[in-house]
Length: 337
Figure 1 (cartoon, rainbow, N blue to C red):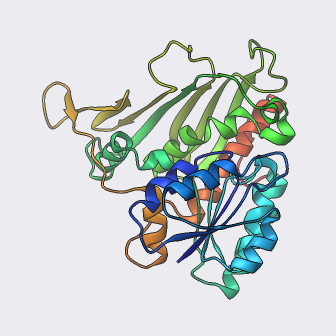
Figure 2 (tube, rainbow, N blue to C red; figure 1 turned 90 degrees about the horizontal axis):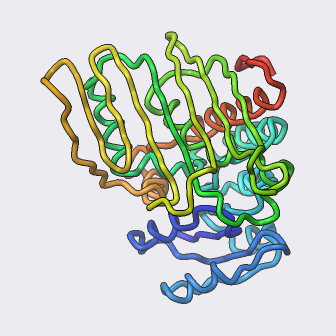
């Protein structure tokens, strides 16, 4: 199975980790995806791990010459939707950095491209790099919710907090970054969708660029309130204010409140309180699934993926609508734009 890789702006580590367990997949072509980026990181990893891909300047030329089974896309934020569409047209499975589009217009074009391609390639697989679904703590909490440990979900609170660090220039402009709700908040919004197993109905969001350390248009803090079907309410707290002295780059948390209990993930640990036992119990985090392995195994018919194209589109739309709500300062309803 041949894999091509575009770009290094994102989570190529998901691909690297998966390839170590997928001897049937070989990296056959690589490109930076833009003259602004360096292809060297891709080359170095391939040289160190037994892959000998051809190097290209143009990603379309690469897709045509190599004719890969899969393409992994971590190119410029504003070009990802176009890159995905180019792969769809060629019947290539796409594993893409989140979010897969940074404007509602490009998302609409992307959805149409995928639907059209599926008429010719019905088994075409598409998924965003929502790797935290596979994190042992979050996966364990999700399994507990699926097993009914807290009854029916009613409220979900999520948090994504990152260190700002030193950011590349493209983070300073919305046109090349997309926004902090989409970039940082996409995981939190995905947890809401995933844990609730419900459909987004409306969102009201706020955001701020104050105290962003002269990073142009980059929003440093945001808060989103979602209403989902069955009157499920959810919040996403998003910021890039985590101190540089903190022990980890990110602080990822979720709290799910149900009719029979509450489950909470924080600092890699899982805590459950429900009507079946007294007090709080700590669940052991465990997951035997890896996101890129899951992607390939799904293509090969070995397993059902945790992350479908429908999931990818739904979460992307939620991120973009939340971003729009914050931009205009008004609540927005899904399906009205």
